Amino acid sequence: MTLDLFEPDAPSLEPLEPGAMVLRRFACRHETALLAAVQGVIEQAPLRFLVTPGGFRMSVAMTNCGALGWVSDRTGYRYDAIDPDSGRRWPRMPDAFLLLAAEAAAAAGFEGFVPDACLVNRYAPGTRLSLHQDRNERDFGQPIVSVSLGLPAVFLFGGAQRDDKARRVPLAHGDVVVWGGPARLRFHGVLPVKEGEHPLLGGCRLNLTFRRAG
Ligand code: SIN
Ligand code: FE2
Image 1 (cartoon, rainbow, N blue to C red):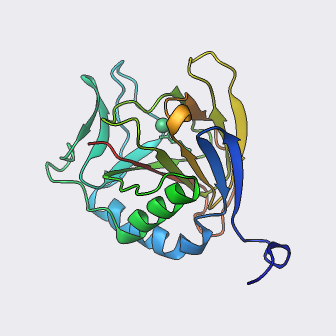
Image 2 (image 1 turned 90 degrees about the horizontal axis):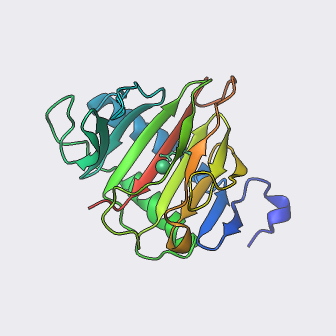
């Protein structure tokens, strides 16, 4: 057993509020497997810019893996078993993803989390995600597990209403945010990502969001 003192990269838990927690550096020890798995997903289902129901092209590039994928188009937001770009099923969820998501959820107090959807978001510098709730999933008893890789970003963690004041939570490579229970329907978003160069990912931030959607 080594003391944290001698392990600057050891994960640490940072409660945000009831039901929500930041697991600092939690994904770091999985980073090689995660990045290889992301690459495999993107080869089968390339990142693309979705259109909002209002007709705007999103600035964050997205794709999915798992039984269900989150999609947006002029008709609305939904989960779909089929990638609309290819007409095929989304790539299967890599084992490294399933393992990390379950471990992170359990560390935050949500045992038995088995995601069936993973949204992959790629942020170029200058891109952001405006405040929203994750509410297309069937069972709000299941948490959201959100993994940050690459460039840092400021995560906004708001309240139950869109105009409630949002906390600014700096997130770095390997940090995982889990929210569920009383925090499950919180508004959240990401401030514009700053220019930078990450040793593994170069000039971008990747986010993996795991959900039990169906
Ligand atoms: C999301 O809300 O889907 C993504 C959040 C993030 O990129 O940290
Ligand atoms: Fe979200």
